[in-house]
Image 1 (tube, rainbow, N blue to C red):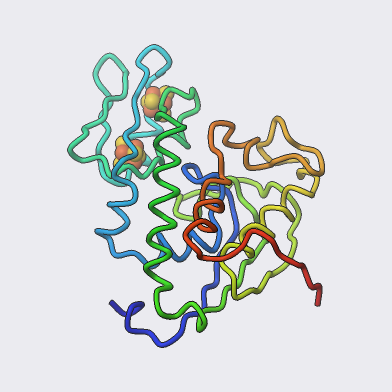
Image 2: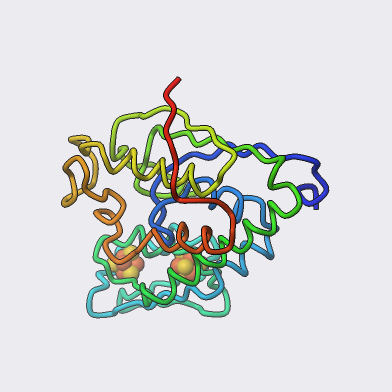
Length: 230
Ligand code: SF4
Ligand code: SF4
């Protein structure tokens, strides 16, 4: 309600990877960050991870990280999800060392990104001309900031971007990151070179461009931009 009633809006987003959207930047900061708890759940609700018992080694990482207490470790050392409790946050996918947890990547992550964009449209409604966005492209970690841990950054710190266009600032941020070589100690095993897609390297199944394309389609902004260095 506070966001709706505000006369103007300044967004300060940390640009980083995201396990469901590929990357999280200004659009995610607005659409997800400004949503109520109910709105956050609505955006995640179509994410329904499946657990592959053949791959599961019963390490318990997913149980320890699940914020909804929705996973139990069966006595045969296999993880089992309680669908009634699951909030679709995707943390179990990110922390599983055996890739035993998955979702239908094409459909679920596309729907997630589009919902996030639609919420962003709602957040900016009637204040498009009175909104300003900052993107902190530093400590570009592979995962979202909501985790209780942080992996090594993918690339060197690149500075702070500023724009009135939430689409252009995310496009420019992702382009800047992808233009860099990967840092030596980061998790990337592929796409390490300058010009290679670092976020596809971390999340090969996720097409992050869906959020930008859909945002442009809904009139949130433009993927074209001009970088002015200060
Ligand atoms: S998606 Fe989130 S809430 Fe659902 S089982 Fe995985 S960690 Fe728990
Ligand atoms: S993190 Fe993966 S391997 Fe470990 S218990 Fe959960 S599903 Fe099984």
